[in-house]
Amino acid sequence: MAQFRLQGSRVLAVELGGDAVKARHGSMVAYTGQMTFKKLTGGGDGLRGVVARRLTGERMTVMEVKGQGTCYFADRATEINLVRLDGETLYVEADNLLCTEAGLHTGTSFTGLNGVSSGNGFFTTKVEGHGWAAVTSNGPAVVLRVGKDMPLRVDPGAYVAHTGNLHRSVKSGAGWTTVIGEGGGEAVQVEFTGEGLVYVQPSEKVTVGGDV
Amino acid sequence: MGFTRINGKMVEAQVVPGRPLFSQRGAMLGYTGDVRFTPNITGGQGGVMSMIGRRVANEDTPLMTVEGQGRVMFGHGGHHVHVIDLAGDTLFVEADRLLAFEGTLRQSTVFLGSQGGVMGMVRGQVSGQGLFTTRLEGHGSVAVMAHGGVFELPITPGQSVHVDPQAYVAHRGEVRNKLSTAIGWREMIGRGSGEAFQLELSGQGAVYVQASEEKL
Image (cartoon, rainbow over all chains, first blue to last red; front, side, top):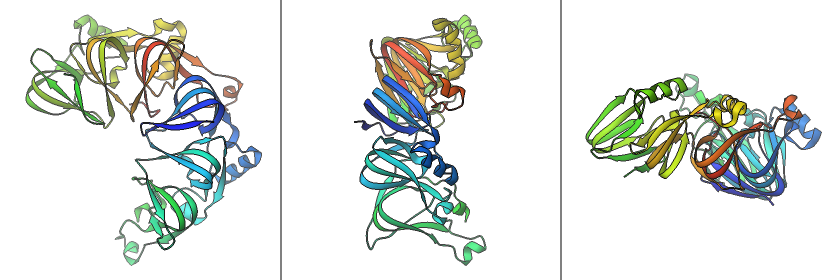
């Protein structure tokens, strides 16, 4: 079984004992032992996965890392969050997924208008199964709990990932002041209702609603 | 003596008379006491011949001499700073990653190409690090810059370390490095894993790796 651990907050160390993990293309920074790197055509999960990703634009280039030893991964000095999945589903932007254990499946899910407002397109990446996943964030991410009568609103550019049974919808905070160019700068928000966890980064990507 | 870490991106050094420091020009952030900063025209130690050597080797990052009495803070470009203490051993580092080092260390420029013949040249081209590197040896401290944090991996005989050339920062000790290629038919048809070139380090020592694949 692959062992995931953090080497500092920005480097992921994975101990491999002959098994394989999937990692973002070109994210290896160092390794000891014997490793082989193989690009997975279209991101893995067979031909259906390829077709789905081509259509959805949620394309990630993934490589399979296999071998014996320790492999170190990092991505542009971003912070790394380890997420343990035991049958639940992790929704994450493809740009933020660094590495997944072999026992996890990745797929795409339709998010509709929610994705567009956050500048991520109509689709997001879905990870499910049993094992560890490593998610990157620009700055240390905070994990916010969403409860039954406690919905959460986040800035689309600061949203990284979520787990649990959550429903998301786009809320507009725009009023007549936004129309005349005097908006509060937070015209578009994503609301999460249900029960689960949301990962939020202390940084905002450029989004469609970012200027209003 | 040496450098005291203030936070991940700033170090402080104590300067006493007779023990100058060298730092990258413009890397001083603040100081207390009576400290003088003089641009070092020869770009380090060893006089004019070494200067010419550095100019030729393109390892002539502008340095300044820091001397006097007081405390000086260093930092540059928001990069993470890592302090490496040398006790008689040798450190190899790119000149543009050097933030500051103590004057007790001997500085020289070495030709890497001689280490591996033609492959040495290829390595320099591929890793974007050039064919020359700066060598520091003796007793003292060095402050090295990197994008993202730095972590240290030990190299022991029988356990070599492979590093992505873009994430390589520095190495110390008796270490041989060679560029290993994993180019197969996949790379030929544009289906490579993105890890075609790796720097293989073997021997006895340590390598410093940054958490990013970006150059400074």
